[in-house]
Amino acid sequence: MKKNLFAVIVLSVLLRVSLANAGMVPDTLSKESKECITCHKEQTPAIVEQWGASKHFRANVSCYECHQAKKGEPDAYEHNGVIIATIVSPQDCARCHSEEVKEFVSSHHSKAARILGSQDNRLAEVVEGNRGFKTEGFPDGVSSAAVNGCWQCHGSEVKVLKDGKLDPATWPNTGIGRINPDGSEGSCSACHSRHKFSVEQARNPENCGKCHMGPDHPQIEIYEESKHGIAFNANKHKMNLDNEKWIVGEDYNAAPTCATCHMSATPAQGVTHDVGMRISWNNRPAVSIRPEVADANMGLPGKDIDWKTRRKNMKDVCLNCHGDPLVESFYTQYDSLIELYHEKFAKPGQALMEAAKPLLKPVPFGNRIDFIWYEIWHHEGRRARHGASMMGPDYTHWHGTYEVAKNFYAEFIPELETLADENLKSSDPKKVEAAKALRAKIDEVLNSDNHKWFIDKMDPEEAARRKKEQADFQKRYQAK
Image (cartoon, rainbow, N blue to C red; front, side):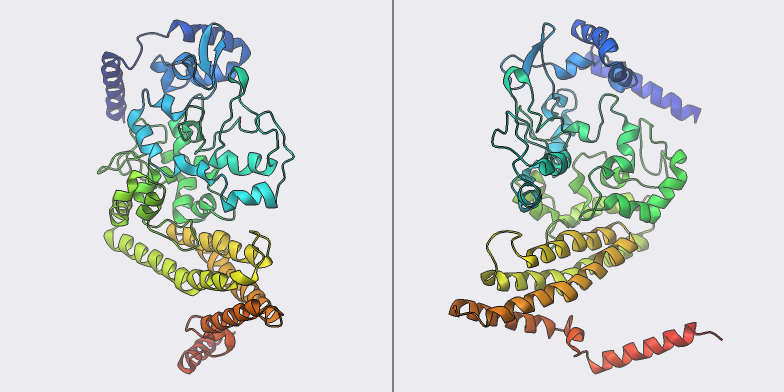
């Protein structure tokens, strides 16, 4: 233990010396920062205290080094004789952390604010909200549901008012894909909370749980249910979370966190700030796609890194605690769940919605079926897929595939049948034709092997097998 501590101290000193020689670490606090601290000790003492416990303090990097701006920049303003900006963007952080920022801006995290204007955001802006929140930056108004909800995780497009002030509809905001006044995308402080920028906090699962929770992407809840989360909560004191070097298998072995699997170092690979480099399915769409396809859609450099390479990266993490047979079998199970969801529900559901389109009001979410289908894939289908990906059985089944199946058979199909039957009586021949096509598609889906049980057409051999299994179950558990 003493040897490890001594090694860390030596490495830290050598790193600081090398950075100082490279001109990246000041020898002393700058005059500007000293003046900032003198005032802020009185005005915002907690911020100064947090900074004092940070690595930035030890490197003589303080207020001015991060907040400095040039005259003419969109959000620059004069403050006590110096030009500063309120927002510290990834572009600012890149002055010292260039590699980390390069990886981050290549990730989906940094592009999260591109949700603005999407179908998801339409819910908050139109279906849930109105234009009642009026500000200087939004004279025509904006939805408070979007401002306080979607934008706080995904990020807002920060609007700058006169004298460098920021519009209150878009600031404060630490959404991970925030669109900054300097044109950069992202917010480092979404994970590295200012002003301590604690690595221990960034490695904690709760840090990710701020956004990765809820009905459509409950990763934090799934993690807490999984054996990984249970092990973490029981052994948090053994996790060495504040260690400078944090390599799984070397510095800790009690449990993995979100960071362990998706970002942190292993003996074979370094830290990455592109969280997509270890995932082999993108489970966001109605039908899952490979991550390189998603990256290509967004114009990201990850388009050239295929899912097999990314899966190999994740397997490298897994193999520090598990044997190869377990890891391979886990992925076999995971892929089988994706295939089940795709073939039984997602693809037929998409085909049915396409067939229903001519009979629906063209307004998004203007039809009951829009909400039913949206929740089947966006909420329940995602939960099933995410649950399987993180070994959370309750979210895979009861919150996932059970909810998908219940709403497919009890809500989705009946609503489509009603839609078809009502339009068969229409005076519009086009609607009658569309209703016949929809009815035919419903019949095609329900008569397929995946769904024929629902119309009492289960294969006789399968029915006999189910009957025997039920009898065996009753015999096994009946009282002696």
